[in-house]
Amino acid sequence: MEQNTSQKKGPAAPDEPAQLPYADKGLAGWLRSRFSDAHRFLILCLIAGVLCGLAAVLFHLSIHWLFETVWHLSHALEDRGIHWWWIMPWAPLVGGLLVGIALHRFAPKAVGSGIPQTKASYFNEFGDIPLSTAAWRFVLGTLYIGSGNSLGREGPTVHMCAGIASKLGRVFGLAKVRVQAMVPVGVAAGIAAAFNAPISAITFAFEEILDDFSSKALAGVVVAVVASEAVARSILGEDPVLQAHLSPRYGVDWWMLVAVPLGISAALIGHIFVGSVLGLRDWIARRVRIHSAVKPALGGLLVGLLATGAFYVTGHFGEPQNTVFSIGYESLESAFEGRLAVGAMLTLLIVKFVAVVINYASKGSGGLFSPTLFFGGMLGGLWGAGLLWFANNVIQSPFDRPEPIVGACVLLGMGASFASIIRCPFTSIFIIFEMTGNYSLILPLMAGNILSYALAGRLRHIPIYNAILLQDKVSLRKMPAYQGARDYRNLPVSAIMQHDVITVSGTETPEEFLKRIDHDSENYRRSYPVVDEENRLLGVIMHHQLEEKCEAGVPVADLVGDQNVYTVPPETSIRDAAMLMVKVDIRQLPIVSAKDQSKLLGILTLNDIARQQNTMIGQVGR
Image (cartoon, rainbow, N blue to C red; front, side):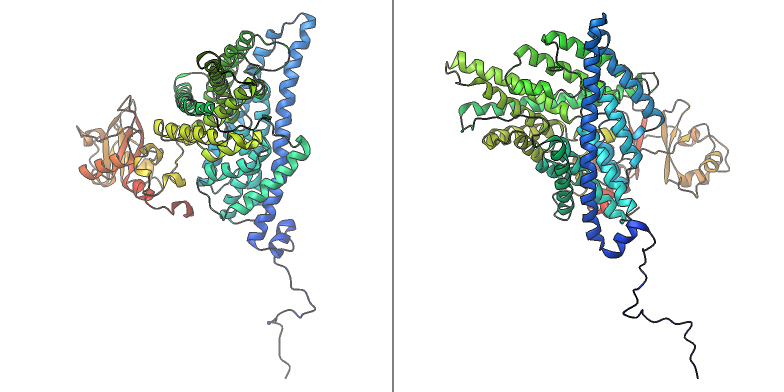
């Protein structure tokens, strides 16, 4: 009897190739069918390195081209009776206006430096950064910095390259965890191409994004950095973008003790800078009553006027050197070579400081890396000049070659400033070493940088990028630095509190409120803050109390009455807040403004605190 085998199919014969499950899905399917997930990840890291290297180089060249064009055009028109200062001071305004309109209408996530957004996407969104955001980063960064605004390109490069790497991971079907892992790959590739400093790129990715030195992520980061560096060096050459080669080989000498006061002063200036940025940024957001699209233009106008004034004060005309406009690496190179007078360095330091604070606080599109190096370079140059005066006039033992001493102090200042503001101590050491190719400064560099880093951490516990995220009400609870019992108890409650507060109007009845929130949906909470018509905090009411009084028909304000409400400001440590909640036996604690205790900012719950004790929270899926 013939068997019916039409319903059964055995394995394909050896000479009949099996059907590949992804054969009809293009290159992504081909990769998935022939390579393991780990191998596909490394292949994509290589591709990401090449693409990020190209993007970073093009970004650098586009900014340089636009600024040079604007600068030379402003001087070329002088032959026609149009003076230089009729053009150059207004270029940052025009760039700021164009960028402000684009940020408001098309690309709100392209504001600022991009590193806070990269961190938020990595920890809170599994590394999902839209490619459109990366494209807007390129365009808006070119317009804003190239028109003369006083910010840097390295932060936007990081965000742009992280977006490119993230898109590659999604297009080629990587798992969410692998897509997330592509973000530090793009970050490292971007920094490597931006600075032509591969070791610094690797350490920065681990210090700022990964927050630990896990060997699991090292292979992909290294592959991307090598590919990105190869692209950048083939186009821009072997030298770092900021060239600071020092010819002499320094032995251990007494003048290297300048690293100690230099590190202390860099920490103090960094502390003032971070506080100024955060304070002015918050003030502009809350108090300046103009359209958000106009704020970058206003910042550009102020910076254009300041930069023009500084250009005339320093007495340098003609070539685009020693200016506050745009990135300003030319001024640093002048300081390396000892060509800047003390008055010029002091003027550039003060005006650049103010200009960067204004540009960043008005929410333009640009980063803080190069301004940080600029501050440190000018500060180091001032210390170097003081060192020469001390040697000549106090101990009467002048240096045979004073210029290299000043240049060395400039580099020491750059490293100390980077460690103070960016808070990446290993990167701050390696990046200066890679810029100079001179190992003989390693001892004072390490001493000054670590001293600056430690003192800055004591003065301000939260680094600038995390502080910006907190100011924008982005939760940091998934970030490794905010997990575990090691140090989180001393962090402020603003690091973990809930910003999306559902409030009850005091004039509402319980029935009206319960209908409004639909308590079976995601809006359900155990308790709700009660506010008056002016949004001032009146008290807190439990959900079960609202249900019990649903038929009473009385306003909720009458139910809370003269309730004694326990509140804390956002600067309160998690430890102190937890002790208060246990002491008074409450599960939710309103967070209010330190200046106005009736202004509700958020809610802290015992669950928020408990989550911080789970060091594996970063691995929990959504």
